[in-house]
Image (cartoon, rainbow, N blue to C red; front, top):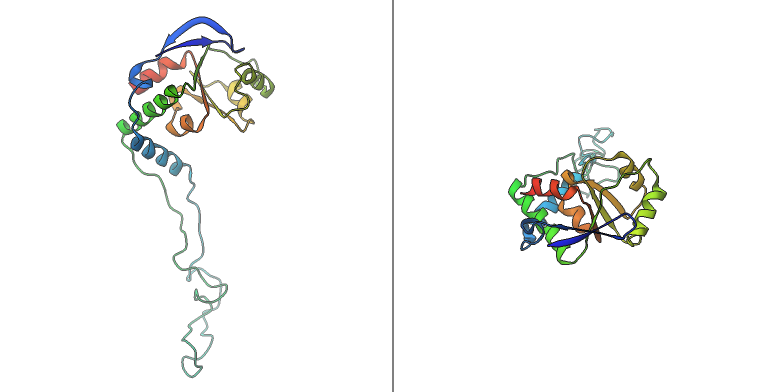
Length: 208
């Protein structure tokens, strides 16, 4: 698959780049994508939820009424879950939601996600660029030049660039990732995938 390389103004540079078919033109595997996205979202969960159970509620353990003769059910203490303010039955406890997905499945999922984007013609290759300082305004101008300022975008850069990352951080529809951190969820969640020229080689090395 061959795409034209554009500059930060959205103009064709006259150069082209060939995307490897082994990454951008495979038959997508939906189940691999499902597993990779499920793991990514599970890993975002803190798992710090907690509610107090019967043994943790701050109440007296005094028996609140006599065992027999009231005409009602037996009741041991105010900590019982059947009373207002009592402990919760089987409440949430801190836990780890992460689970294992094989590396080969992850690689297949990311290739599948990139292939979907390629089939939809939602990949743009931009020449390598940098910003002199963290300026959100400059990043917005760049997106306007590429005619994607109204879309949800994912910019893939070759290496960590503090100025580019900070410039995009306040934009709700803009996301920036390095080529090494690309994942299926972010690729599929974006309307438009903007890949820096230098990132293609890194993606190829990682996924092949």
